[in-house]
Each structure stands twice: as structure tokens, then as C-alpha cells.
Amino acid sequence: MKVLIALSTVLCVVLAKDQPRKAIVFLQGNAGVSGNVTISQPSCTEPVFIEINVVGLTPGKHGFHIHEKGDLTDGCASTGGHYNPDKVSHGAPNDQVRHVGDLGNIAADENGIAKTSYSDTVVSLYGARSVLGRAIVIHAEVDDLGKTNHPDSLKTGNAGGRVACGVIGVLAPFDEPDQDCGSGQQGLMPAALTITISLLAALRLMVL
Ligand SMILES: *[C@@H]1O[C@H](CO)[C@@H](O)[C@H](O)[C@H]1NC(C)=O
Ligand SMILES: [Cu+2]
Ligand SMILES: [Zn+2]
Image (cartoon, rainbow, N blue to C red; front, side, top):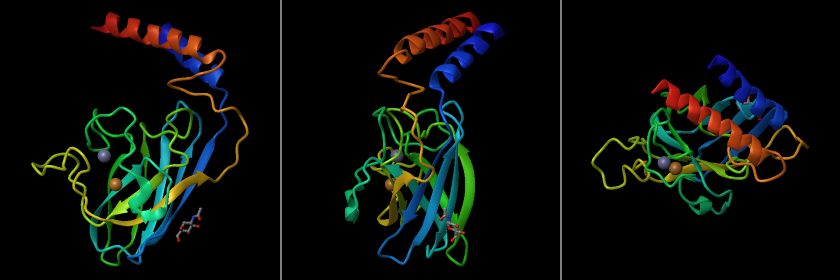
């Protein structure tokens, strides 16, 4: 069993051949909120590390999401809904069921500053589900994480208006092809993925 796990991991790493990626988000809004977010990922098989620096917020929690479009034509209003390629319900960052873009809340102190960092295993800078080119949006209110009876709870977390946003752009330029951990489309990747997924499925069956 350990051999199988090792094999499937090696297969993914070898075929992915990825370099580290790093993204920058320059946050702006009409409400005096500004700041930046960096998203770093050492390889396609490792979690992203998100570093957040925001000023000008009202004290307390604010919904913090990745929205599907990097379109700021109409300010934060034109960034679309939460990035949700799986078409599932809104949730908390640690929930099994969540939008890819569901990063929960950031908390501003009494001076309106939110400075924090954490890892996330769902967001990725690689492949078909990469968040590069999409947007980060900060909301006026707290994201209820899909846990209240409000009609919007399982759609948006009822986090209110959009006070700042920015496009997720490339910070560390990379030039390797955009091979994918999860749904490759070219060359060896589909075969490798099928093998990896079959191995993992077999492991699941053995465990159950
Ligand atoms: C993000 O903002 C912080 C605080 O203003 C600043 O120190 C940092 O250099 C910024 N990061 C980038 C990558 O611009
Ligand atoms: Cu949002
Ligand atoms: Zn959501």
C-alpha cells in the first residue's frame, strides 16, 4: 500500500515538472480599503500559502473570496460570483463542500488593519483550475460560511457589499507549460492521471 502511495505521488511530481509559482493581488476600492495579497505555491502538489495585508477596513470580520473573473470594468461588481468550478454550495475554508474561492473571513483590528497568512489546499496556481487571472474580493460584512438560515447563506455567505478587490496576477514569471495536477489536457498527463486516480481509487477500496 505504501508503495502504491509513493508511486502515485512520484508519478504526479515527475510528470508535472513544475516550478514554484507566486501571484500578487493589488487591492483597491472606493471605501478607502487597500492592500495586497500574495499567493505562493512551491509545486502543483503542495498547498498555496496566502499572505494578506489590508488597511482601511471597519474593525471585525470581512468575507474574503476569490471571484471567478478578473474583470474590474465596473469595479468589484464585475468580478462575477465566487469561483466555483465544481458547482457546489458555499462553505467554510475547512469544509469538504465549498467553492474553490471560499477563503472565509479576514479580521481587521481596531485600526482597520488585517494582516494574516495561512495555507489552503483547494486553491491552486496550476492547471485548468488555476486562480491566476481571477479576482480577490473583500466584503463589507462577515461571511456566515454557509451556516445560517439566510437565503443567501449557501450561495455567498451573505457577506454584503464589495469594499475592495484586485486581479490575481503573476508575481514570479514562469515559462514551463501549464501542466495540471487534476485535469490535464495534453500529452502524457491524461494517461498519468488515469493511472494515479485508478491507484488512489484502488487504495480507497482496500481501506474500506
Ligand atoms: C504588501 O503590503 C505590505 C504592507 O503595506 C508591504 O510591506 C509589502 O511589501 C507588500 N507586498 C508586495 C509584494 O507588494
Ligand atoms: Cu465574495
Ligand atoms: Zn462561496
